[in-house]
Image 1 (tube, rainbow, N blue to C red):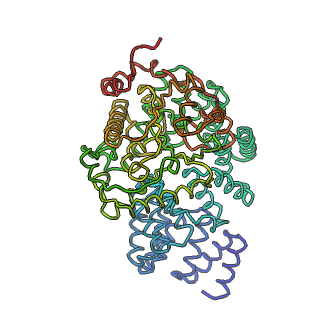
Image 2: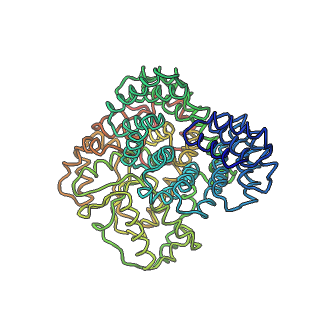
Image 3: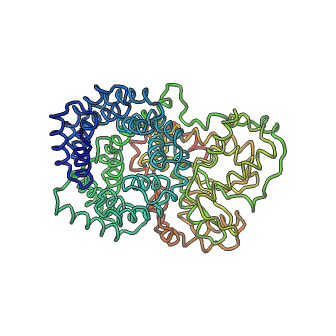
Length: 611
């Protein structure tokens, strides 16, 4: 191929005349068949015109003619992937990587293919291999974070994305992916800023438009969400409409209808649209909630059955080892510290109650978020969205062959001081700390980490949120949890009952051993006598005036984003809607009641019909 001919083809590429570049390459190939550069330019022009079936044999010819060239073999793999031949694409990627093991582009391609096939663990490992080779490339960190998110490895997602602000601006699709990951981590303000910036640079980015509308709803800006959806729909009417977009708009409109109290409209929109993808269990969780509010209990239970079945399929791909026959239902609750073990712990110095966090614990859906928002409304307290900080601290100790809770006695003064520093450091990365306030750490299943809490903060005030166990079970069963532990526990009501009893037994055993400073807050009493109960909580913590806690709903609205399933409930005043919901579902709950009975007896709750 002459330099002049090559220049003409490249110029056609540069000005976007892909069809002309294709014809020029074909014309030259008639004279110089088998020329590497011509074949590559032809294949590239076809691919960029989305003529994938035509590009495939050209890439295949390049790989055949130049089998030792990793680039050509990898391009052939991508062409196979674009054509839907995923198994053949994977094998070609592996051949390319055998030729060039450090080729991060091909590692990225293989990892994205594995994600496409829902082979989440393999994708995570592949993309982390790319990160290990080139740790400073934003695109690699973002794609690796996406795979870790699919595996519910949120702590690693957080670590991978730490320097994200220094990467901006990114290519539109990468910035969109970054925004989605930040949303998963609960940083809605950053998500909103990322999406608004992306749309300023590329107003036609439809996924960003849709996601921004959803974010507006999550931060309680319903009018902005509605306006954004109207803009998207207007644009869709001008162009050929996309079924995927129509379904997403319908789902968002359903959410807005429900937020505004029009349950019938929400249900109609959801049922007309149907699930967005074959595995869209979120659709069924939302539909179940709407059916419940409309009083259609059979409809709610049918939707929940579909939701949990689809979610279980995903969990088996994400955490297959947790489905072993002998796998514990709540792994953290397996080990226990006995009184004899505790006597072997060395005596150490630690902060007093006023310099320790206030911990809110309890089985999820027991009213922990309501308590957190009440405390956060007080000017002398500061809360944060729940974070698994104690899980992270113990994971760090696992690197030193430390097993929780068996090896707690090994922690000396230096270890505990360093762990407290690490805890404070993690807190400061998640919330702008106001040092004139006392921290409130709300994470329901921190009840399972009581040995570590007591070792680091033995004088801490702990509030245990209690609610009728049947209401807790029903509310959990209706939730779409991101946590693998909770998602798996909720697969059936009997399994959820076993998880509840296991967690409570673990808590009660350790309370007997450590005798921590605990206030028991019953949801039913908090709803019935909010003023009296908030006063008691304030006295327990050491606050003189509890009145600010009564304005929690306005405070929550002012905060915007609240990363909890009950975000729409905690921005309204206390009401009795959450009391005794379980009674309507007594028949469905019947198989779980014998399992729950020990905890019903212990906490003094009855399953007799309430008056």
